[in-house]
Amino acid sequence: MAAGDARIAVVPGSFDPVTLGHLDVLARAARLFDRLYVVVVHNPAKTGRLPFERRMELLAEAMAEAGVEGDVVVDSWSTGLLVDYCRQVGAGVLVKGVRPGGDMAYETPMAIVNRDLAGVETLFLVGDPSTSHISSSLVRQVASLGGDIRPYVPEVVARALEADR
Image (cartoon, rainbow, N blue to C red; front, top):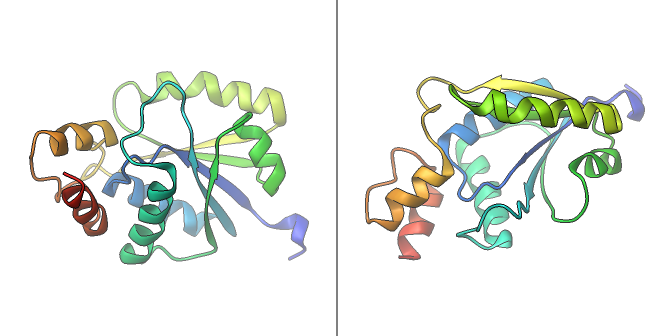
């Protein structure tokens, strides 16, 4: 396969923190593409609980702990459009995990604009029913109130958040 023929995708997210739902989508996406860039993005509309660098570390550790296989690169992006990052790494696809409810309504306009701006398609992967109720914001809320987050996050993340209390 020539380098230009490689199937390359980007999975963006805040991953604050990475959840079992994220890992489900990442493992499935890694099987579909030759190279997968998992990109911790800065969302100015969200206030991060974990520093950017720590999110990247925990993401890499969680994927290793979960046995996510394939050519997977953890990276970050904080300036410019996400499609600019896609162009930079040669990705023609963005992968988004979607949960029941409002995710599709929120994600669809962005998918259309990304395609219009740069020809980047969006692949929606429906979350597994066993994890589709989990969100990073819910995990942050439970953790902040002293609740047990272990059913919702990888072990490495649970240890990190518990140590941070």
